[in-house]
Image (cartoon, rainbow, N blue to C red):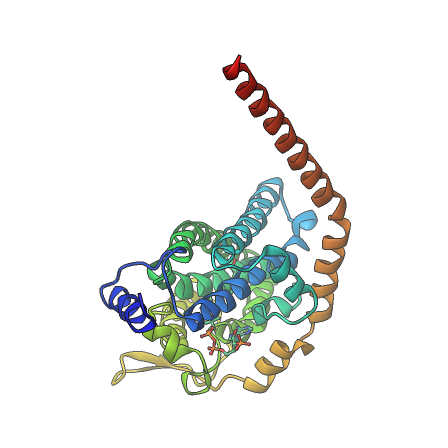
Length: 323
Ligand code: 3HC
C-alpha cells in the first residue's frame, strides 16, 4: 500500500475505535508519542517505589508493613508491564533505562518530594494514587492495544492503593490530636504537587491536542485535574482535614469547584531536575542498576545455557528421526 492509503487505514481505525496493534502500520509521530508517554509512565512507576520504600521498615504494624510492601511491589510490576508495552514499539528496555539514568527521560514530578512522616503514606495513597487513577482509567481506552490492556490491570491495583492510603489517613484523623495534625501536615505538603501531576495547563501543553486526536489521551490535563479536585473535596471533608487552598469554593454556575493558581515555577523547576529529591532519586536508581548488574548477567548466562540445551536436544531429535 502507498503512504496515503496506509495513513487513511490508520485514521479510519482511530475513528472507528479499532485498536492499533504492534504489527499494524502507524505514523512515525504516533509511535514516538507513545514511546515518550509510555516510557515516562514506566519510569514514574519505578522511581515512584522510592518515596514509599523509605517507610517499609518503619511501618507502625506488621499489617501496615505487609500492605505497604505489596503496594511497592505492585508499582514495580506496573513499571515492567509498561516497559514491555513500550518495547512493542521498537525501542529496547536498555535504551529506555539508559534515558532514565542519564537524566534525559522525564518521570512524574510528584516523586521528587520527600516522605517525612507515616502520614505521607496515607497522603500518597489517597492523593498520588488517586490522581493516577483519575488520569489512567481513561488510558484503558487508549488507541494503542498493548498500552490500553496494560492499563486495565494497573488501574485495578491503583484502586487498592488509593483505598489503603485513604484508610491510613482515616485512622490518623480519628486518632489523637497529634495524629490528626500529622494527617493535616501531610495533606498540606502533598496537595499542590498532586495537582501538578496532571501536567501543565492545556494552553501550555504541547502534546495534548495531538494525543487526543489520536485517542491516546481521552481528556485534557485541566479536565482531569478538575475532576480530581471535585472528588477530593468531599473525601477531605470525611477525613475532617482542610485542603490548603483559600480559593477553593463551589462554583454553582460551572458545577465544579474553583481552585487557586498552581505554582508553575515550582512545577517546571522540579521537572527540570531541581526538586527537593531529584538527585537522591536518580542516584538511588543508578546504584540499584549497578548493583543489579550481576543479576542481569546471571539471567543472560542462564538463558544462553537453556537455549544451547534446547538446540542440542532438537538436533538429537532430528538425528533420531533420520535413523
Ligand atoms: N511530571 C513530569 N513531567 C511532566 C508532568 C509531570 N507531572 N506533566 C507533564 N510533564 C511533561 C510531559 O511529559 C512533557 O514532556 P516532554 O515533552 O519532554 O515529553 C511536557 O511536560 C509537556 O506536557 P504535556 O501535557 O504536553 O504532556 P502529555 O500530553 O504527555 O501529558 C501526562 C502529561 C498527563 C503526564 C501524560 O503523559 C500521561 O497521562 N501519562 C501517563 C500517566 C503517567 O505517566 N503518570 C505519571 C504518574 S505514574 C504514577 O502516578 C504511579 C502510581 O503508582 C502512583
